Figure: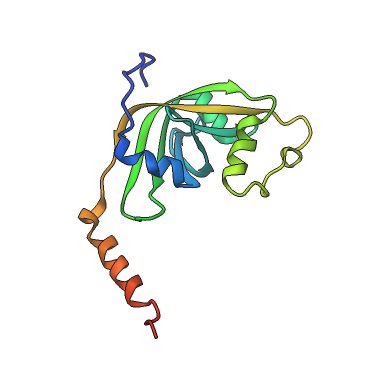
Length: 161
């Protein structure tokens, strides 16, 4: 990967709702051990400008990004399964000693699943900010599958008395 920074790509307004409403996404990084792609589900935060992820310094994802800052993020629209946003770019990593982002992400997901104690003693958290250089926002099959699914769901509703 070149060390030159590519220009940032904008996040289309048409897909911001996915970032505001999806609870989970997947991120892919390049393995520091063998150069293969490593993909993991993650909770995330959309701050209005960037996608941010909280992780531990002990995680492979962190070590991968120290070796190669390239990262891909993909979130599926929770209301339309064939609509998604893929963000390719590079990671900027910063310290999060107060674990503020992890608390915020846990709050988005119901707030009861994670506590700082779960990280273990001495665990160090960081914030991964994804700087987008390429953004894709397709709708698979022109949304036809979603239209069929909506019709089926409607047909399953009980009839009014």
